[in-house]
Image 1: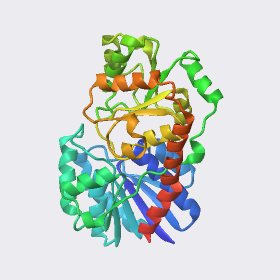
Image 2 (image 1 turned 90 degrees about the vertical axis):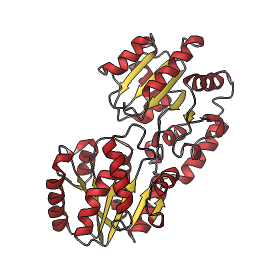
Image 3 (image 1 turned 45 degrees about the horizontal axis):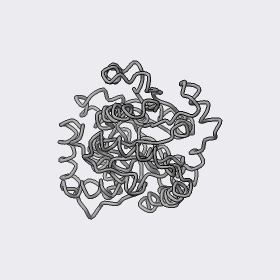
Length: 372
């Protein structure tokens, strides 16, 4: 049985981390490959989940990039002990460090992971520079480069990545976990004091400049001018009343009573069920997991045209990437005024397409083909 070691910068909740967890657990369960995971920093919530599921997880406790040299040698020592057949790295930092270490140990199959699209949107100068370095190393270090989205592949080829090694494997959804009942919907609404008949416009994502929560707040400011009864829900890490920056925006626009801030949750399907319209407003995305989850949860969606969002929802639900908050608000108003905006036939058709194309089973099969 081939042994695969996954290397990632950290294991807190995020799109890449959740995909790693799904891939490892579903592939390990099939019994064809053995998986172990190395976090360059700490254990995180995903690391705890993996350990509880019986996956061996190592942590190297990197505190900053100043410790990169000591981490390099710690990782090299650890990989020599584990003796993997395949090393799979996730995102630029792990691609760079993990790739070089694996190459130095003459590991024959090194799989890089590209999850982002435009790192110039909110990414640090260091990350942008690291992408340039990885582009040059892509010709000599990895044997395969797996992108989460077609748009990510195109962008990285343009910045110099080796096109001959690049594959696209979209994220896979665990369909059995994306379920919620009317009781779940009502419970979430009651928990945060939302009237039963209120229309809820919601969003899910960690508070981050790339996720662009400020744009969502500006959209809400436009919407309440004509629809003051609307309720807005923000779910995700740091979307809480303790976030002074977020609360400052809500105070400035007199929106505190209109917003419900739920923070990081483990019951995302229930939160999606409590929404009527789901919004994706990121500045950039690769494969937007939560947009697919919203479709599977039968939500009407409004999204900027970022990443592979156009593969998940219909044209009528998408706005151009540079659309204004007024344009975005008008799209939501049209949806609310359209008596068919919750037309189950349309919603179920999109849901069926997403389920057919993007199940976790299909993703695991694609990765296992690369594992060989």
